[in-house]
Image (cartoon, rainbow, N blue to C red):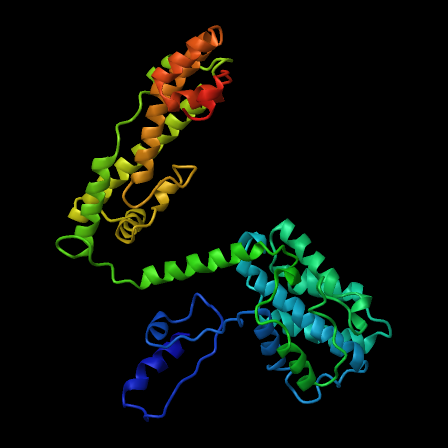
Length: 417
């Protein structure tokens, strides 16, 4: 590699021919020269998006694209059907990554090399055995080739379950349904061109059933793709605009100061525990104290991080990775990651309105609902006429709270009078 780097450095002196190009195919390597990477145009091969496109890519590349390959095996009919089944199996494993955790707990890098070695093993097993050795195929393909990349136990079980659907005796029969609706089935064609015609007739967007999912799984996939697209757009954005000075640092400082002004003071947890103790008759107090503690954790983390990012913008402290991510989130109006981990629910937004509303709701709860709980026991002993008068004085909101607490109100109050 040092010699290769030296040769690349000397390519510019003297200037090479205008049609000269140096193509270098390599695997990821920690010793590859960094200077060569920085001065090169990088190209990466990504699997085609979509099950149909993936199958077309498999039948358009070697060895399946070679003339006479599908007929070169001693058992050509079995070989053709199992090759088609293997290609769908390979495409399903790759496409399941689009479904996030529904597809795989860990996104694995299944690639063309896994399918190529599986094709070679399939060819050899059919050549050497009279009967189709499905047990050996499942072990070599499912446990070694593809399974060698799988590290999660549940994912390994999933992979083996998928393999059972594509490698069995019924696959060798024409018309075998690989999906519940029969959209994907074992074709009875022979040549590569005929296989491509069958593939072109498949749906452009693969239904979730071929992956073993419910129709609602498309919601997860589409949401994941949309989030990835918007995240990429944000990365491509310049990062200016919004503040008076127009630069990124001013935007961060202005947004941080605006949010910091709207942050409420921390709740007194000791006073809350004394005022609203956990009692059998007042189980809501437990939830109230938990919400106050969570809100205090969130506001404390926000105050600390906002102060630190303001100092980093002014150059007082070093702009670390987490602070830089916080600043980018403030510029783009996204929820910072360091705030998400402090809050179990999505109650944050760009201008901090939902937390303020949550605070107002909590204060309303501590100031009105809890006294109503205490009053409910007394109201149960009063006459209907007294209850009606008291609830009319308290208002409609109080009446609805009393209904939730089990106090029987007159019918006129039920109708919203």
